Length: 225
Image 1 (tube, helix red, strand yellow):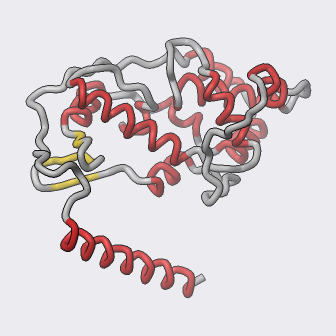
Image 2 (cartoon, one colour):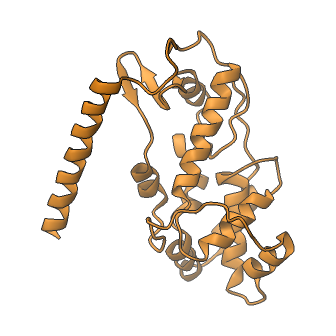
Image 3 (tube, helix red, strand yellow):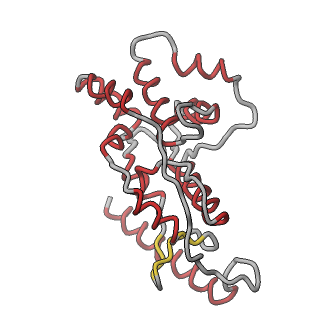
């Protein structure tokens, strides 16, 4: 285990040296002549689905069912207890720099990472090297729904998880679960990880808000508070 940790530290150091050398030789990978600067104001509305019914279902479950859920899907239900600070969220959007995909605070650049999202979500059964991406040939919507829900009692855990993914983690329209979420959820049964997809959705939405200097953040607001 110690050797594995040392190998990882050495590998990270090599990547760091390579990135510094590449930066010195080639400069930034953005358009020549582009000036990276933040606008004076970014208007953003923060809205999210009403999750009280889902929270009530979770609260009614016994410890065994809750443990079964967390063992399969991670710590998603604990996002219920995070209160979204709208002013903080607007500040994040204000200082998001789409040119470099990071938050720029003066001379300090910060960026959310897959490691951080993985630590927050804590999905023990997911295999980090099997990343979710939409397949070219996928089953029909009804077929995927049948596979996900099934007919036995244990499937209520899966249905609950699908609701969390659709209404909180990947919200598209208020009160509705998008079909793309069912595709992702169907693929999670193969124990891939959704963390890179969640992180990519965060970047995509923040970039959209920044480009328009206004807009509605579409993503899991609770992960940023």
